[in-house]
Length: 118
Picture 1 (cartoon, one colour):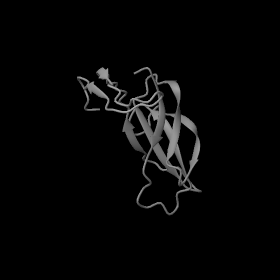
Picture 2 (cartoon, rainbow, N blue to C red; picture 1 turned 60 degrees about the horizontal axis):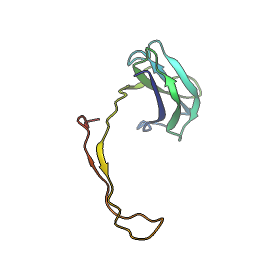
Picture 3 (tube, rainbow, N blue to C red; picture 1 turned 135 degrees about the horizontal axis):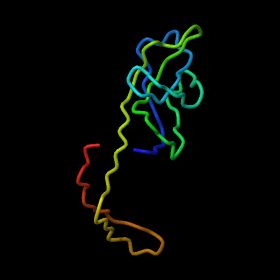
C-alpha cells in the first residue's frame, strides 16, 4: 500500500488509573522503531485519531499506540500491523420495486469478491 486514510481506534487498557493521554505513531516494527508521530497527544477517554486521507505510508509497517502519564510515556506500545486490503464486489443489481417517483424500494444484489477474508 502506498496511501491510506481513516480512523484508528483502540480500547483503553485494563489499568488506566494514571493515564492522561495516548500518543500514536507510524513505525517500522512492533516496538515503535523508526517511528513518526501521528497528530498530537490524544486525551484519555478519546480512543480514536484520524489519519488524513491519502497519507503516504512510505516504509511504515505498523501503527503503535503508547499511553502517557504526567511523568512518562509507556515503554512498550500496543501495535497493529498495517494491512491495506481492497475487495471489489461485482454484478451489482437493484430491481426497484417502489412504484412512486423519487422513492426506492427493493433489495440490492451483488457477487461477492474473490477475496473477502479481510
